[in-house]
Length: 326
Image (cartoon, rainbow, N blue to C red; front, side, top):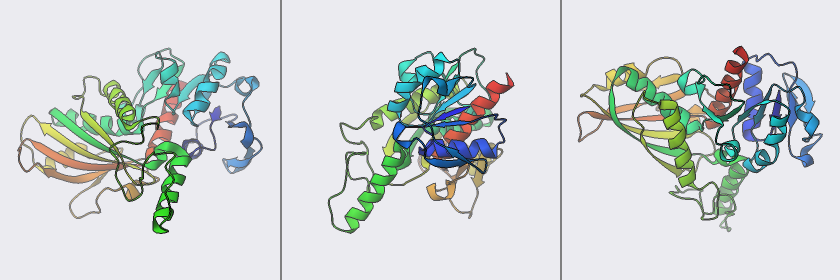
C-alpha cells in the first residue's frame, strides 16, 4: 500500500483506521511533500519515515490512497496509475481529472458496485451520512421528500482550516485583525453561507459534490434530498438537520425504531443530544432529537452528527477491503 499525503488530517486518520481494522498489509509507504521527507512518524507501533514521491514509490503497490491536498493529488495520481495501483482518492481531485472514476461509498451502501475500475473517488463524508440516514429510513418508512442542512467543519479544509479558525479565535479575543486566507471571511464566532469569492472549493461546489455523491449512493432506494451546505465555526465533525416527509403520519418512536441498528448511535429521550463534540473519534453516526413538524403532520425533523475525518477514512478502507476480497 501507499498512503499519499500521510501527514494530512485524513492521512493520519487513515493510518489509524488501517491499524485498527487489521488490514493485511505487507508494506505501507507513507508519501508526502518533498520538504517533509525524512519526518519521523509511526504505523502499527513501529517508527516510519515519510518519503517523497518518485516513479519507484508505486512499484508493486496494490492500493494507493490519496489523502493530501487536491493539488498534490492532481500532480501525482497518474504516476500511481501508470504502475498499476488501484487508486482510492479522498481529495476530490481524481473525480475532476477522470470522470470515469467510480464514486464509492460502502460506508453508506454496504457494497461496491460491480466494476473492473481501478480509479475510485471516495464519496464525500457528508454524502455518506445523508445517504446512510435516508436509506435506513426509506427501507422501513416510505419517504416522499427530504431536505438536509449540512454544517461543515473547518477540518474539511485540512490543517490550514483548523489553524486559521484557531488563529481567528485568538485574534478576536485579543482585538487583533483576523487572518482570512483559508475561508475568505471571519468564521470564528460566525456561521457562513458562503466562503470568500476566491476560495476553492466554494460552498456551492461542495454542495454540488454532496448532492452528486448522495444521488450515486441512494440510487432508487430513497428520493434525492435538497441539500444546503453552510460553513460552521467548529473544528471537527459534520452536523446535519434533516427534514423528512413520510407517506403517512408516524410517531417519533416509529422513526427512532426505523433508524436503530448498526452504524448509528441513537440518542433517545433524555439522553445527550447528538453533537459535533460527541461525534469526535467515533465511526458511528450520532442521531436523535427526533420530533414531528409543527405544521405538517406527515413530516418530522431529526439531528445528526458524525466525525468527518473518521467516516472518510473508514469508507476508504472499506473500499480497499472489498476490492481485496474480489
